[in-house]
Every structure is written in structure tokens, then in C-alpha cells.
Length: 208
Image (cartoon, rainbow, N blue to C red):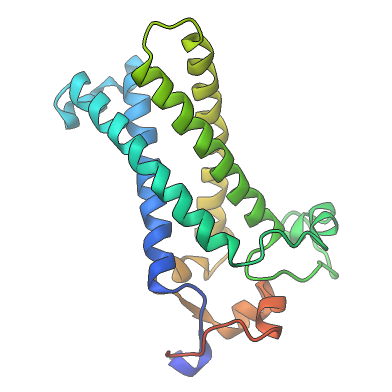
């Protein structure tokens, strides 16, 4: 039985709400976007009352994506995402995920792989919002063909990174899923995955 004293708070309630706000927004955009783009996914439109309904849901969810990106960027900014002192060495060793490595550079609250994922989500999320709004408000204009191409490219990139993120956040790195649901994880997990964060006393006290 794990006691509260053996746990550390990694994410606050606000941080978890922001995480799920972004995750659910992106998921809904992917599902509705696929429903509009591919005939094999047209059955999705039934859930939203037809193609007009799915298009409206997609467009307005795209608007909701903008504050989600800004809120997440604010959360990540406070966590030292721009400290790149050991990132190159971490990537050279793949963080110890792909082969056994004894001297993986110590990570803060977020390791370099997570930081790369964050930057991809922010940059490509902004690209998706910009191209999506252009296609919505400027239909038939000459640059729209490029907007569709960039939008489709953004889907491929975001979906690829999301699948990796979901895998590592569930079965790939045991214990990770506890963080986004409860905010807490075992202290030994933090000492292994984010030792620099623990060393500087940034971790929330157990049970508080």
C-alpha cells in the first residue's frame, strides 16, 4: 500500500485541466478533420448530424484550440523549457529509451524529448489554427491550395507525435499516467525521471 508520504505532486489541478483541455481539443479536431477529409471516415459525420454539423464542430473547436495553446505555453514556460544545457547529449543517447545507457543526462521536470513534443504541439498547433482560419474565412482564394497542403502536413506531424506521447505516457513509461489523472506519482519515479527538478526542491510536498 503506497502512503501519501511516498508520493510527490508533479502537476497542479490547473496544469491537469489545461493538459486535458488541449488533449481533448486536438483529439476532437483530428476525428472531425478525418471525417471530412476521407470517405472511409465519413461515418463520423453521423455523430455530428451530417457534414455541415461536423464542419461547424471542427471550425469552432479550432477556435478553442488557440487559448488552449496559449495556456499550455504559459504552463511550460514556467518549467524551464529553454534550458538546453544537456539536451544534445540526452538526444545522442535517446534518453535511455531505445538502448541501455548508464549515464543519461539528468532531466528537469520535463526531459528533452518532452520539450521537443511541446514545441511541436505549439508550433504546429499555431500552423493548424492559422491555415484552418484561412480556409474557413477565405474560401476560393488562390493561396488556399497551399493552406490545405500545410494543414494536411500538420495533421501528419501532430498525429505522429501524439501517438508516441500517448504510448510513453501509458505503457512506455510505467507510472506516467498517474501524473495526468491525479497529479501525483511515486517519489522514486521522480528521482529516476526528473532528478534535477527534485534536487532543486521544486517538487510539491506529498499530500499537499
